[in-house]
Amino acid sequence: MMTTSTSCNVASLNVYSPTNTNPWNRQKVNHLYRRLGFGATPEMVDIALNQNPSTLIDNLIDEALNLNPTPSPEWGYWIKDDFDATPENPSAYRREWKNQMVADMFQNNLRDRLTLFWSNHFVTEDNVYSSPAYMFQYYNLLQLHALGNFKDFTSDIGLSSAMLIYLNGNENTKNRPNENYGRELYELFTLGVDNGYTQNDIVETARALTGWNERQVRWGPITFDENKFDNEEKIIFGQTGNWDYYDVIRILFEQRPQQIAKFICGKFYRYFVSPVVNEDIVNQLAQTFLDNNFEIAPVLRQLFKSEHFFDQRSLGVCIKSPVDIQINFFKDLNFELPADFAFNNKIRAGCQELGQDLLKPVDVAGWQGDKDWIDSSTLTTRWDRIGWYLWRSWRHNEEQFKTLAINIMGGNSSDVELVSRSILDNFLSKELLSATEYSQGLEIFKDQVPENYFEDGTWSLNWDTTPRQVYRLLRFLITIPEFQLK
Image (cartoon, rainbow, N blue to C red):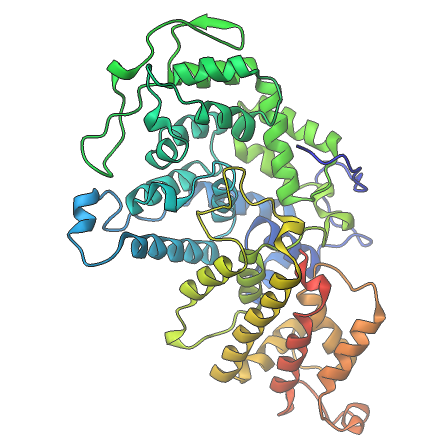
């Protein structure tokens, strides 16, 4: 359900055009990449600053549309006997693919941001269906449809083996109808809770969804068994007929288009803009969704290009997820790590530790996000984990901390206050409200360098102490509350 709070962001969906008073700058570039993707390396930021924002967004969306899905692993279509013939436990293959998901998110931008988003919308939990092959096939559908047609997406995902098992579709027969998938199709996937459907619609829909039960071998494809299909008339949304699965999808999108459009665009808004919804903006996005026959890309083009998206009141209002707090920071840093660091596995394990076990949300309603990401325990765990990453980076290559500072400043600088503030600002969504934290950061950044070195121009970023100074400042940065926001 949408929050009842009132959004203070009243900027329009008109295309954002930079001006002297509202410039296209590092802050806005980082905002775009942290929301649309998973952060940006310093090089990516520099390239973006030399592009028109609308052109950049078109390019990023086109890139996502044209990106091929991640190739199938060797085991992507194995059956149970194939897995049993190997010494590995199936859970090892599932972990392997979650590691691949981390690699995809780190490498790519919007397509894999949306893959993560849809995994928390069309929810399944990998430990329920168990098959690593089902996991890959489900993930493949998320990537294929990430920016495609939402109606086609809804149709295809409901017949995936992972979903059929997770929501008991494989147990739904004419003699024992199961309402799970029919209920979640309306409540969580398309319409929203108690929005345009009745209990009788769910009952009749369950009957129409019967028959997807046939499986010749364990962990093999689940197909349609006509003998288990309820071959009688059903009444769904006032429409009477001997409806089957495909009829359900057709009738749903024909009879409830406005509700679907508003529900999905509301989720886009909360995910990409703010947990506090501007209903007028959502209604306009929903109309774009309808005008484009439920194509996702036009909605995102309109949103990401808008004055509303780039408004100052959209900055720093979303709490970073465990994925964000780790991948965004690494991408922003652009650091090297030891060859044996096993980056993807470390990030996956960090996500699990912090409450975001990839491809295994907490329940069918998914992670609720935002404030649910942080409590007294997970906050300190975030500090510890990110601090450990920084320490490993430091042990591997101290000089990269100096390089980071020089890249942020665009060259050498002897202005210690400007350098300290610029480094902090580079990793924050917007400037700190309190000057106290800037002052604290400055004192930490000065480290043990004699004060007169800063005053007489002796010190600069090329000074030998710079790597340690930057390291200590970053250790302070990760404890600032605003660092948890994007």
